[in-house]
View 1 (spheres, rainbow, N blue to C red):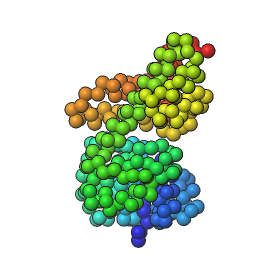
View 2: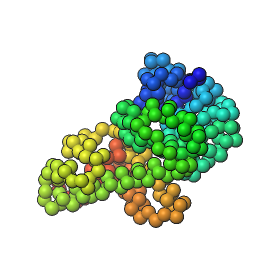
View 3: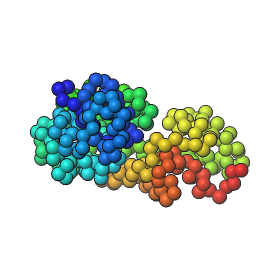
View 4: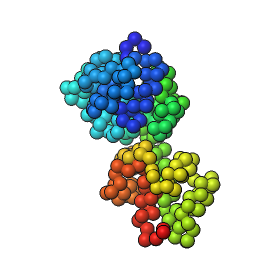
Length: 294
């Protein structure tokens, strides 16, 4: 590419994703609200710029990886926002997890500035981002997705075209709803078994043998055993995803009683565990019980 790739949002997922782009040989220009987070990239040749506007002025393609729809709006809008510096033909690849209405609003707002938009939320954890093994769900004009598939593949193992921008966002929320709901159910099931007098360690061991338990949960079974959960995704953002999923489902006419129930549970857990890892919903379900686990 003749101009740098722009990357905005260097959080837990964004930093390793941007690193992969840099390692693939692309010049990189970055912006983060807290500039010191760009230091590992700057030390390897990336350029840290003072605003999203400056990133848009410098680059032909800009990737955003932000925590929530409000953060996306903040980056795009205002005199120092990305759209203020956008040139006609700029490509925006938003890899944030947002709702379909948010995606539609971005496409409309960007089109007024001649900006083309791909929504490409990802499946996978921080570890997958570091290894370049993310599963990317891409939505937008097919020819635009095809044009930037090689760039996206520097961050992921596959790019899966889902349809329009809104469809890509809905698919991501659907997958997250399965994971988040299953974690709550797993916590309830552990409580059921321990309530019958089975030692918790044995419950977790046998759960780990069951094909009914997801590989994601099995992969963190040792953390559940020790109670020392590594922070990979804050519970508050998991709750946000359930909120977006519920809204998207209702907008599409779906009936979502289990997602609605999970949202209520994650909302309760937010009181004391908002910054804990999303897997904290499992011990939270145990703590909600009146059982004595000693």
